Image 1 (cartoon, rainbow, N blue to C red):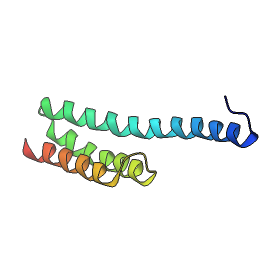
Image 2: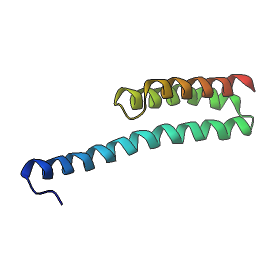
Image 3: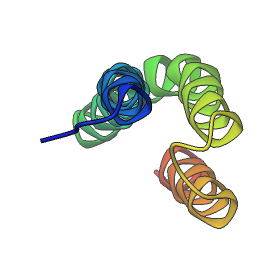
Image 4: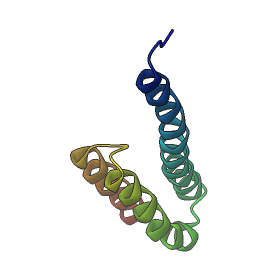
Length: 86
C-alpha cells in the first residue's frame, strides 16, 4: 500500500491513465474487428468507408503512447491490404 502522499497520487493518476488507454485501445480494436467482419461478408464499400475511422483510431492510440509507432504502422498496413485485396 502506498504510504506517502506522492505515492497515493501516483496510484490515482495510474488508474485514470489506464482507463483512458484501455478505451483508446478498445476503439481501435473494435473498428478493426468491424472491418474484418465486413470483408468476410464481401461488403467492400462499407469496409472502405470504415478504413478512415480505423486509421484515426490507430493514429490517436499511437499519439497518446498507447501503442508503439511500428505497431500502428503494421496495423494500418495490414488493414489496408485486407481491404484492397478482396
